[in-house]
Image (tube, rainbow, N blue to C red):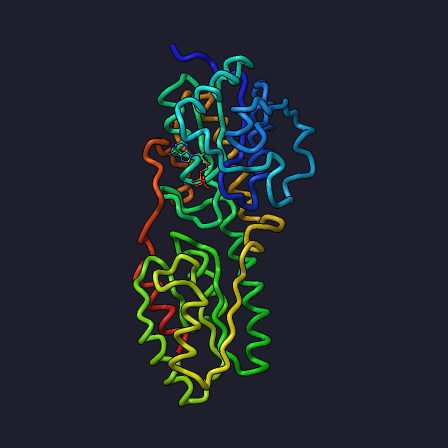
Amino acid sequence: MEKKVTKIAVLTSGGDAPGMNAAIRAVVRTGNYYGMEVYGSMRGYQGLIDDDIFRMENRSVANIIQRGGTILKTARCKEFYEPEGRKKAYDTLKKRGINGLVIIGGDGSFRGAGKFSQEFDIPCIGLAGTIDKDIAGTDFTIGFDTAVNTAVEAIDKIRDTADAHDRLFIIEVMGRDAGYIALHSGIATGAEHILIPERKTDIDHVIDSLLEKEKRKKLVNMIVVAEGDGFGGAEEVARHVKQKLPNADTRVCVLGHIQRGGSPSCLDRLIASRMGYHAVECLMEGRYNVFVGIQNNKMHYIPLQNAVKAKGKISDEWMKIVKILAS
Ligand code: ADP
């Protein structure tokens, strides 16, 4: 019979995302509610390896639901890729009697947890925390909604100045493998073109459409580019546009890390609270070594071993909407 989970540790790993604190809070409070001892590991897997772990009571997570970043810090941990590193992490947990782990992170963190849970008898539960929304099996990830709203706010401001000067702005948003931030923020701000890694960028088509707009004196144009777009990001797009359209008053703006920070949106706080609660429920019910996703407003539990980046899921309909609305 499986042993009851009585002591759990929670950690945040990989890229940070707004809402991670709300998820930590939910895990700590749900764990304490069910009479578990809850611990926090600093800097993701590194804290397990270095035994940088501390007890978390309900009061330890007071006043953090509204804060961006993560009170547990996050890190990329090279040692955890190696079996020796994972053994060290296991030894720390064993020594402390911790027999359950909640990992808030992206697909990389889940792959690490998948290996760990295969090698050792510590059940692991993942919570999808990534601004890129690039994990297959969940409609939501903690941090995406806040990041996309930050991008929308910034692009709206850029539109004001673009409008004042009749400028063409090429705006780069985050998204190395997934174009969701670009797609959502681009549609919500009325961008003329949205360039994403999921679609091959036809730069000649972009130029032709800008030329056509120039002819009918539509001079304020915004192109939103995901950083991972195959053509090469905003600078590369701008270089090409300037060559072909020397008369256009072209500017580049790379939004960068502001998209990772800030107070989480209501939606991200809700998702984080719901997922955190269900992570502990999974440990209670013996539903081990899964990550918690939401599909069609229902909880879904996907084996950690199956954690993969979501690719190419952007529908043709969205692209058609972009085209029609930008004319
Ligand atoms: P994210 O979780 O945001 O995708 P990373 O891919 O950097 O970020 O993963 C975070 C951490 O998870 C890594 O620094 C490493 O410690 C661990 N990790 C990622 N992939 C693996 C793997 N294949 N095997 C073991 N550990 C991994």
